[in-house]
Image (cartoon, rainbow, N blue to C red; front, side):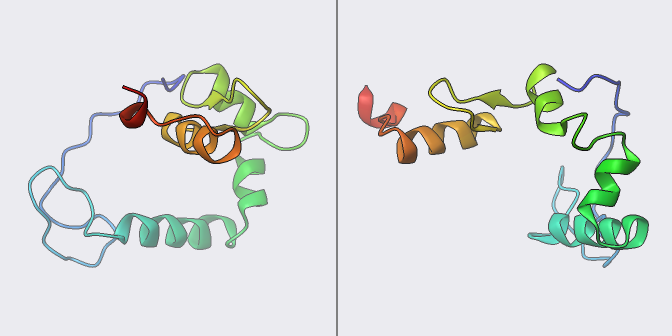
Length: 107
């Protein structure tokens, strides 16, 4: 789904946020520590500014990151409105905003 090749990463058994917590096989983070790492990266590299992060990657008012996510297939657009998000978010949005039954209840 990503437009550029990403390297294969191997979980090491230690949390990647830098806290040194041991994690299970195949895990990169202790529970919740992915968000800790994300916030720390934003602080360390972009002064805690999402606008600076977007600008640093060439996105902003004239080049939408959400449109890009939809274009490469990482996100989708709600068929009933302008909402965009990950596929699971689209399903949740549809149930809440458009009264679309969940797959479990419509079978």
